[in-house]
Image 1 (cartoon, one colour):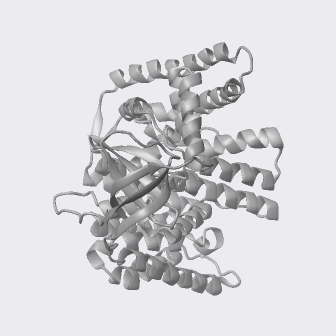
Image 2: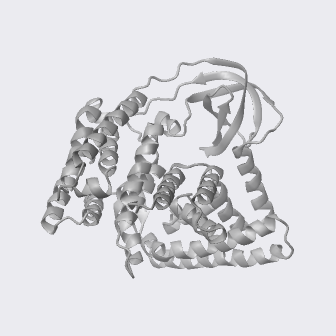
Image 3: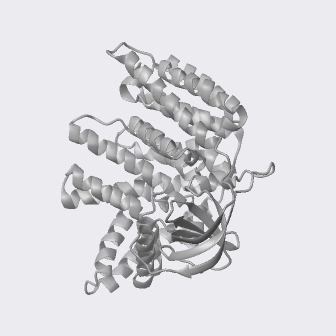
Amino acid sequence: MEVLRRAPMLGVFAALVCGAALYDRAGLWSFLLIVPAVYCAVMFCSYEDEFPEQWRVFAAGLVICAACSVRMYSVFTKPPEENITLTNAAGTVSSVRSWGRTYAAIIDADDGGRYVTRLPFMTMMPGDRISFGGVTKSFRPRYADSNFDEARFWGARGVSSWISLDDVHELPARFSLPRMRYLLSRKLIMYMPQRVGAYLKAAWTGDRDELLNQLHRKWGTVHLLAVSGFHVGIVILCAGFLFGQRSMMLSLILWAYVMLSGAAPSALRAGLMLQIALISRALGRPASGVNAVSVAGVTLLMSSPLMFWDIGFRLSVLAALVISTLPYKKFSWLMISPVVSLVTFPQVSYTFGKIVAVGLVLNIFAPVYFTFALTIASGFGILRLLNVPLMRYVMFAAEGIFLLWERTADFFAELIPYSAEWHYLIAWAGTGTLIFCLCRYFRLAPLRILAVMAAGSLAAFVMFM
């Protein structure tokens, strides 16, 4: 069983994803039947040679599937929180985001509760300490004509219910990561040129500038603003250059950055993958990229099953799986953009309505360009925040790097003004491409690859389309 040898957790992750995706249709049966069936199918589809203890590994995978299924089903079937009245509660505002024409603030109460409230104006800031009272209200059910589910959206962020605040009083500030992120964001906006400040704010704190977000959506490169494996990889490469290859030091820097940037699902996935790689290197054992993605995915689903419904988690995992399967050859980097775009097309087009064609071109060289740009801007930006002389003027050179990108991206966007909406044939092709990449990674014979692609694509089409 080649899968058991190189990526034993892939079957577990694939099974849990299928079980969660089909829960709305199959209910309990999605975990009782579909999860073990998918696990066995993934394990046996690449059956090759015998190796010692393979059945013990196979059985361990079934046990993990069972434990994860129990955990996920218990969360999915958890009844809505009962409405309660809070008085003289205290908490910290962890984040504030736009919500239609209003704002939504997440409050972490000192008693362990996590609530979200609507604000007509941005009267609270991340890191604010408040004393409050109010009445909680459970999330609205998903309507038949809408794909948006409040409970799942906020549940993926650890929020239990809405709260209508009253009797709000400000408390003395104290140290917290939300407050540190907010103060750092303010300094970046105050002391940096406009574009440098916006890009560094997104990369360092996970807080995106809305104008920048819209521009990158137009270019098909919005993933460059979401803290993910790209940003985490840059941080670890720079840390390794400065501090050497000491695994403990790199691990501390890794998780400090993930926490500072807001611990988004994509950042957590990347952090877990790199941590697995660091541990494997310390133990002198090779790390499998596909297995690292699978371990990270299973860990996140176990810790927060509702994270499955977060679009950032899905796209991050899909992209990481595809990139992990591609061969490391001279011109293999040219394949990354079109292959990842095809595999993620169903999710992107379904969620955002369309995928822009210019992104296929720009994403070929955008990662290299932004690796250089963010590294330069971050290095000089740190010196600027430390008030090193002349850095104020040097930052304008970094500003020019980002402005050059905008001019180039706008040129290509006008040159290639096409887009593609969701279509079942392209979605089917994306599913087949993912299965093909995995089959090639596990070195299956050509006839077996065709059989697995046909069976896997048909099964996915029947289940999900």
